[in-house]
Structure formats: structure tokens, C-alpha cells
Image (cartoon, rainbow, N blue to C red; front, side, top):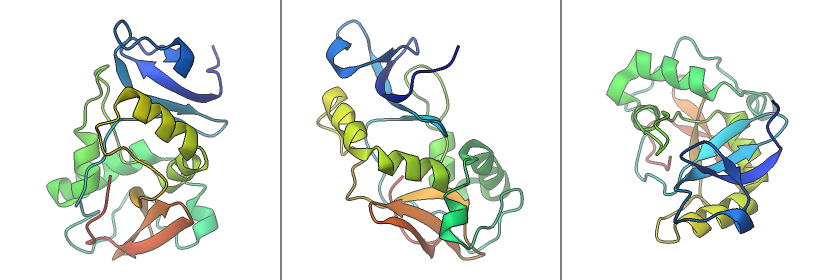
Length: 178
């Protein structure tokens, strides 16, 4: 069965619910599901500040090194990238390690999204932020003002981040949001 395209609240039974149909008392929210022609990802409430992509410069084997922004936006391998990063760097890959150990309320594990997945998220940021704030207004939810890490690497010492204005390559040891 094909998933409907759009931005939805996803509950603990993996139901996709539009804003007007959601009942927080009977449908505990996992986060916001973004389903496009290119991605099907879930964004939790809240962000994690101050995490580095890596505590040291190192090229991670098992993920492609992408030096061109347009090519980076074609990387949709966030889960596989995260697994390779954590396998190579463990806890020194702070952002990927945190995401891979994040458990959603439906029991599924998270991962650090790729540059392509992050771009799809930013293209739909207004709807995503609206639903995240419906679920939990208290959290510091992701929004278009933030710059977030992706699991896509640019070089030995840099990785791709995504913000409202597009992809940017910054040093892997920079403290950023996840």
C-alpha cells in the first residue's frame, strides 16, 4: 500500500493523522511524518544542541564524499550513512551516535538524516513546524531558523549542514543542532 504524500502527525500505532483529526488523548504522537516522492521520514519534537559531527577530522568509509551541493541534495541514504558513521567513529560521532540511539515512542530507532532528506524537510518546514508545535509547544522544535547536521560528508574535515538558505559545508568539529 502506497503511503499518502504530505505532512502528518504519526501516532504510536504508525497511523498518519492530519492536524484536524488528531486527538492527543487517544493517539499519542511519535512526531511528524514527512512523506514525499523522495522520502518517508519522521521528525521528533525537540532538537539537541551542541553536538559535533565528529570530534576529529576523518573520512568515513562506507558513505560517499560529496563536494557539490547539487549532488549532496541527491543523497537519501541517511540510515545507511548513520550506521557507517557510528561503526567507524562510535561516540566520537556525536550527532550520528545521538540520533542512532534515539528511540521514538513507537519503539523505532532514529538516524541522522542525509542532505537530501534534510532538504526535503526544509522544503516542507512550515507545515512540519506547525505540527510539531501542535504536538508539543514547550520543546525547542526544529524550524527554518536552525542549521542542522546531515549524515552526508563533504571532505575529511567538513560535512553538510542544512539551513533555510540551502546546504552549507562546515567543519565536522563545530557544535551544531541535531
